[in-house]
Image 1: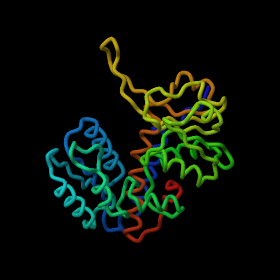
Image 2: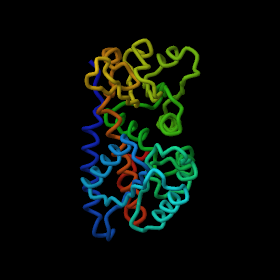
Image 3: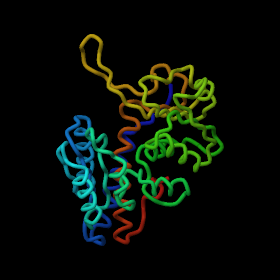
Length: 298
């Protein structure tokens, strides 16, 4: 039976560490860390995500400095809000919650966030820093995957890693982080011919395809480590309670994998936790404190 990569447990452990980091440095800093999650509109899923982030902030001592703007807010006003947060010395991290309402282009708004306050690690400058191996905020989901693998003692150097998915949110930075850990990395995607032939070569398989239950036993080499980044809500055909699933057919893959992340409870909690890590790391830097979290920022 495969080892489960328990994101909930690891997230709780990292939160305890962050609590201690904030408490030990609060007097020297003169203020607590501040995170601003900017939400536009009333997307129900975004509401849940933002509430979870705000609760996590309160648990470790981060001040919530976010804003919730109506769906009809003009782009110029959203931009003005971002610029105000950029200039606010109490704000160490800014996250623009996606998706935005129809008619709002996320690209110029994301580009307007101060790279030093980019809590999601997706600013062009920070992706460039990742590519060059320079320190900076890291994309939360792939950094969370790296923390899960490290906690489980998964050796990456010299191993064959395959990432399924090539988004700038997960797939591309995930490949860069694995490569920086000295894995030999390939990327598969929707246009890859004979995807299973590629994924069966993987010692470590990270699936971020965004397609429910896409990867099954035929895609996985026995003994591989499998990380499922996907999360989807599947409605019950009989009108019963909806359930969550990932990109991987867990029940097929678990018996042949060495380790596997469940959905829910695997990568998801780590994404929120790495958002907090980016914020506290920024706070330390901006307040001239030592940097105790470098091991969590690959």
